[in-house]
Length: 169
Image (tube, rainbow, N blue to C red; front, side):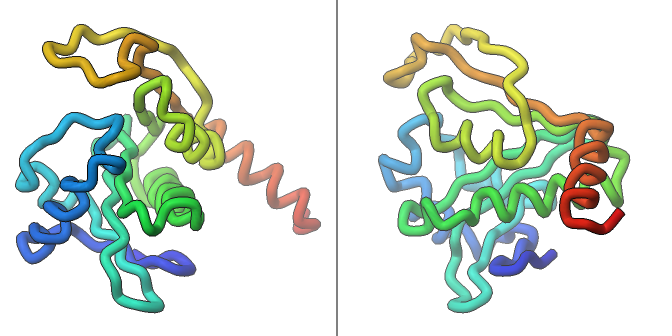
């Protein structure tokens, strides 16, 4: 799968060193619990490769059939370039146009403002704030977790509005 600046392909065992490097960055993992790298290998997780340089940017997750979970994790040097939004929008569009996806959901810690902003740019809306009892809570977890979501109907309506705004009615 390709976007304007990224190639998104399934993560493979050959990406394990890149994943370890990504997950070794304390700033990348600031709002996340560590999990074994092997958890991310497979069709639901996609490596994001910068087309121009061939560099490993990070990964995206789009898991599920009717309800798809969206996730992303990028190397810090790629933050603020719009890659998270670009990759997420492409996966959302693909899920709604070629799959049985009826709803996309994404979660993060309440205090993770940058990730929340990406979700909002992708059209997801805040659904709820909830609290999880973690055995070893991360700083900021006292503010809770947030869930964002977008339905196929909401996405289609927004596409129609964009189409009209672009003068293509």
